[in-house]
Length: 550
Image (cartoon, rainbow, N blue to C red; front, side, top):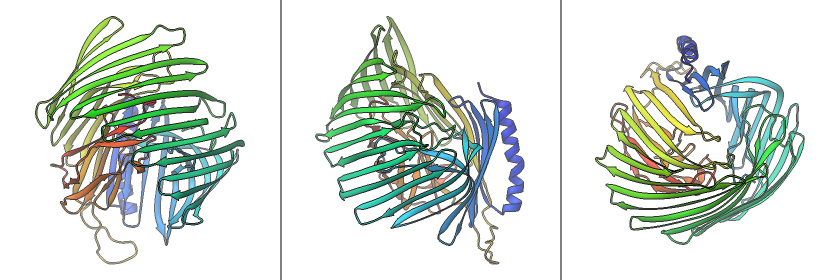
């Protein structure tokens, strides 16, 4: 259910603040966005502002009926970046080979600096409970906190990392990373997190043919990097290993074993899940075959599953494939699901998807497809997901919707669906636009009439995996600019010229956990005006079947 009234209230509040921001802050570029998401039961809006001297945002909304606000501003003082307000603090360790997306929310005054020799981040204020969605950020304060994060390059191959938090519970984690060769990286971390012991060590080997990573973590039963109510981040524990062997351009095989700790509440113990998998894929001249075996254990309840698929592509016009899924949970009957799909690319802008599924003695048919125009993007597809925290029915086929409508100029409406850890579909709806002046930005440090304007040309697109699911945190280098995809897989970069600009996907720099390979991307992109800019489609494949299968 969409809390339309709550969304209107939050949007009205931000729109009321917008003229005051424009008058007092002299800012000339604003991004206004708002939306609603059933994934986190949130409704809200946010204004991002930017000027030559500083940038920031102010957001407000409701999460589970609870109102909250958040704001931050950042500016440079000599070689330091100073922040005031709400900040998302990244908390990565060199031993995070399996999940490098750890962060938490803090509110206060922060300062950071980085150069070739290392980096420094310090903040004094309070930890905070983060809540919101992809459309806005808000927080509520919790406990006083002092943060000092330092990393330093000791030598060409050795790096030292220190993570220290002084709060209601103390964290002090010290780590070293040694990379003697380009293909080998090793690391070790020791100390305490939220008054709980922690030790981890691991390595990663990566060549053109082989990727092998492993670590062992020994943590206390209530270990947390920092004690905050939200977000509750999962951790790997005990032994974890993953091997990806790329025999050639046609065949690869993946084996993995992972132990996951999922927090149920803060403070409190963690729920543990263990996942094993082996999978492989072969593709040649339009034909592809693959499969995988999966096993998971959650709270002493075990489940096993199998997935086999095959298909054939006939040029760019037609694709036919079939899938076989089988799962068996402890003391539960075996579940089998068969599906077949036919995808027809009728034109460059329109394709049609037909799906037939047989499960539990019933046969169903469904239709989908995608349509792309200058103003409208619409995609209805089906994805098969593996849910280790739902062992009685770990495989699920779900409808994936993704739509965007450009109303006028930069004003856009978006809608998307996603599958939650419990297997239920969740939806997000949003809107965004830019408000800016082409000229009239007067530098605060000068009486000159130098102007500051938003470039008129844009390169935009979407990053998806081979199941059509948006990929968040994908790293792209477009010309000299670096961009990351958002929660719906979208990205955009503005330029002052048409280009063309070189476009490179950089899987090693993805913010999302997992190993990715690029299946489809243009080598260059041309920037266009908002009214005529086309969506670039980039397709990658996640080589981590324990979280998603074909």
